[in-house]
Structure formats: C-alpha cells, structure tokens
Image (cartoon, rainbow, N blue to C red; front, side, top):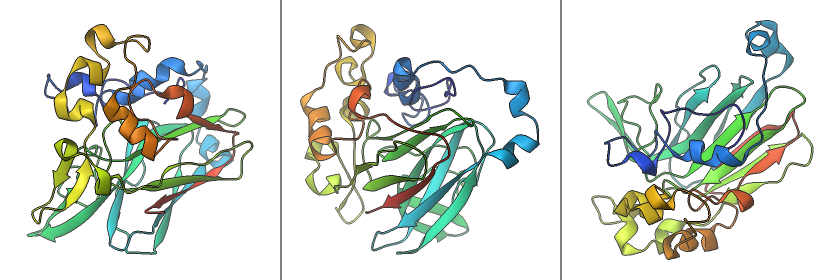
Length: 274
C-alpha cells in the first residue's frame, strides 16, 4: 500500500520473522508505501465529528464459497470498525468504513466454536472470538489492503499474496472514477508446491505459504542485501503466484502491476471465492 495513511511497526512483515513477530503484523504495507505519493492531511480537521457524516465508504463482503467463512478486518490508521463476523454461503454483509482509514480485510475458514473458543483452521487471528479485536491473520492468508482517502483524493487498494494464499478474492469498486477491479480468482491451494502447502488434519491443503514465510531468507523477503527493488527481483516462487494471479502482489517489490487507485467516493464489493 502507498500513501501518507500508512501502517507503522505493527503490520505484516517477512522482515521480522527472526525477531518472533508474525508476518501478518509487521512488514508488507511499509514496503509498498515507498512508491506512493505523500499526501498531506490536516489531522485536526479530520477529528471533527461532522467529517464522518460528509464522507464514508461501504465495504460489502460476500461469501461465494460453498462453505461458511469468517471475514475479518485489521485497522492500521483511522477509527476501528467491525473486526469479524461469520458469513454463510451466498450471504453478504455491509460495513461502513470511516474515512480516512487504512487497513486490511481477509477471510477465515474451517471455523468452529468449541467450549466457547472460536477457532479457524485457516486465517485464524488467535482472539478466540469471532471478532479479531485488533489481531491480524496468521499466515498464509489472502489479504485485501486499502487506504481510503478524504474527499477529493484517491483511494489505494490491492490484493496481496506476500503472506501467502488461503482463499480466492475479487474486489470491485462501485462508483468513483477510473476504478479498476483487482483479484486473485484462482484456487492456488489446488496447485500449491508441496514445500509451501499447509495441510489440515485430513491432509487437505488449506493454505499456500509465500517463500518468505516458509524459508525466511533475504532473497525471498527482500531484506539485508536484497532490500531494494534492484537487488530483489522476482523468484520462481513469486512467479508461481504471479502467473496464477497477475493483479495481486506476489512479493514485496511488486508495486507496478499490483496497486490500484480509485477516484474518491467509491464503495467496494469484496467477494471471496468469486
């Protein structure tokens, strides 16, 4: 993601695995923001109560999977919103997003509530509840990332596989100006290399790790001597993801073909298993 509305040190990173931090809570957005123009924001004016009434954005999240899912959000900047809910097949839910806001959306599946503790086999946030309450997804998880900007400025959005993949997704802007769709419509789990595959108890593949997540090497995570676009080119593993989902981020320096902008005023339809 790009822009001045950015995540700080608490969001996803392949960079901090060695330090024991979750990939999904430290790096990826900070890396992507290098390419986004800086936007100066009058934060005092954004604190006025009437601002939210002037401009907000709606996310309609739809479950097109043949099983139940539990979408979740993680706020980076801006007011917090609903952090998780369950969706049966062919059901949607609309949440109103504050503006400005930056954060991510993902979906969990294989969920159960045993003994009062909610847990999902894929994309779980570890809260023990349907709501994630400020916790991010345990990778691998397909992430939809947004920076929603004040009136008159562009929104930025992307689908990221930097933390790996768990579910196909489609993002369709509704309204706004010059707003392309983005997606990862393919079930990568069905084609995931064995060394990257995450299995459930029955042996089925429920996630596909990124090479950074699996191997934690600088050439895959774009760290150390590989911390610039010139020194961290695509690898065979990132090309595997990119070939299947050309619009999605396949590794940290995949900005040019993976970040999209939309003229202010759009709502967004996010469909899992499109």
